Amino acid sequence: VQLQAYGGGLVQAGGSLRLSCAASGNIFSTNGMGWYRQAPGKQRELVAVIIFGGSTNYKESVKGRFTISRENAKNTVNLQMDSLKPEDTAVYYCYAQLKQSSRGSPAFYWGQGTEVTVSS
Image (cartoon, rainbow, N blue to C red; front, side, top):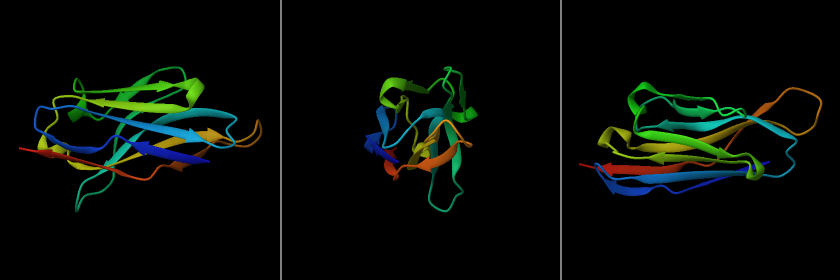
């Protein structure tokens, strides 16, 4: 299984970016998909998660600015980031909790990071 993330870049404060992440390979089913981020010198933190049924959860500081969505048929998760702030600057990592067969428990898979830089 591979997760390919893309969409990061440099944007001015108040601007928008859209991150996408596609999971490929031997996938039987996906549970949660989402995004973490890690700023320089800080621990990785959960930004947003969406489960198969569509329920979402967000880090408090991004509520109302970020929107997570998924395309189940494509095993893709998106993160629309609006009203970006300098404190959103970080490397963003997507993840998927999925199963490769009908048996066993789901496992976590990570994508490579994509860098988001918000200038003031």
